[in-house]
Length: 225
Image (cartoon, rainbow, N blue to C red; front, side):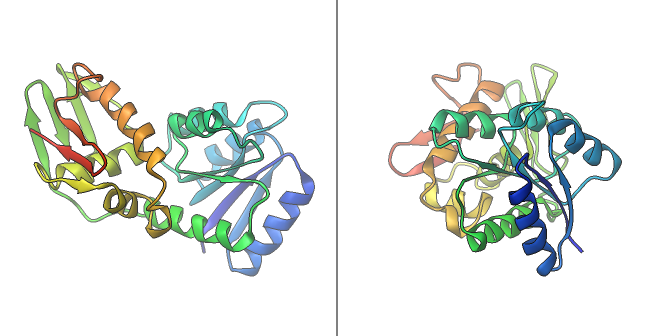
C-alpha cells in the first residue's frame, strides 16, 4: 500500500484528501504544520508527500529543503500561490511537481501516481562519463567536479541521466519532459529551464556558456562530452 503524507494547515483540505486517497487504497497520514511533517518523515519515510507552501510555522519551501537533506521522496506542492516565482522557488528547492489550488481531484491523483512512479527504484543505467574535471556516474547517482562531490536532486539526476544516456544526441523538449515527469507534462517547458539552469550552476565551469549541457534553441537539449 502506497503511503502518502499530506501537509496542509486547512483542516477541510486535509479531510478531503484523506477521504479521497483512502478510498483509492492509499495509506494516509496528515500534518497541519511543517515541523509535524518533518517528524513524520523522520519516523517513517512516505512514498510521496503532498505539501502546502503556506504553513503556519516552517514555510513549505523550508520543509522541502529539510526533507531533501536526507530523502529523495517525491514531493508534490499544493498551493494557492499562482506566481511563477513561487513555483520556481519550490522546484529549485527540490519539489517534483506543483499543483495550483483549486485543483481537480482526478488531476491531482494523476500527478501523484506519476510522482510515485518516478520515485520507484529504476533499472541500473550503468553509465559513467568523464569529461575534463567532471565525472558523472548515472548508475550510482554520484557526481564530482574538480575532485569535489556535487549534490544533485533526484529530479536533476533524472534529467542528467536522460541526456547522458543519449550522449551527443539531441533530446527534444517534449521527449525529455515525458521521460522525467510523464506524458501530461510535454508542454511544461519552464520546468526544463529551471532545472537545466540548476544543473549548469552545479556542473558547468561557466553556466552562462555551457560546454556540456547545451541548449538547441526551440528544439531541446544535448549532452556534449
